[in-house]
Length: 206
Image (cartoon, rainbow, N blue to C red; front, top):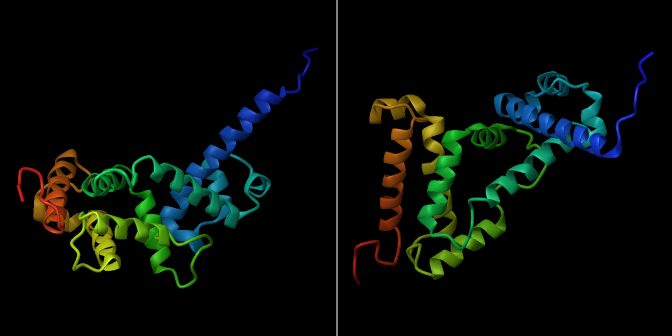
C-alpha cells in the first residue's frame, strides 16, 4: 500500500504563502469589482480555489483580508513612490501602474462611493501631504498653490483616464490602456506639472 507522508515544514510554509497570495489576488479582483460591502468571502475563496474557512484562518475574516490587501498595496506603492524622485516621475509612475492594473484605482473609487468606509487608514495620509509640502519648499510646486488642493488635482489627473475611458477614446482616438495613450498622456502630465513649479523646467534657464 502507498504511504502518505506528512509535508515537511518547508513545504507547509510554501503552501501557506501560496494560498495567501492566491487569496489576496482573488480579494483584489472581488473588492475592485464590488467594493468592500459587496464582496463576499465565499466568492473570494471560490475565485482563489480554496475553502473559505482559510480566509478566517489566515486573515481573521473579511476585514483582516482587506487590511492585508491595503498593506500589500503600500508595499507595491513603495516601489515607485520614492520621495527622492522628481515629482513628474512619481506622477507618471502612478499613471503607468494604474493603466496597467486598474484594480487599485477601482478599489479607491469604491471607498469614496461607500457610505460606510471600509476598514484601514485612508490612502491619502498626512505623510503624503508632508511630502508635497516638502516638494513645495524645494520649488517643485509653486509657492502660491495649496498643497492639499495640488495633491487632489494631481490625483484626479492620474485617475481620470480610468474613470472616463469613453471620453479618452473620444478625445485621444485611442484606448485608455494602450501604450500610445500612456506615452502621450504621460508626456502631457509632465508638461502640466512643469507649469506648476517654481523651478525652471528642462531646457529652460532662469
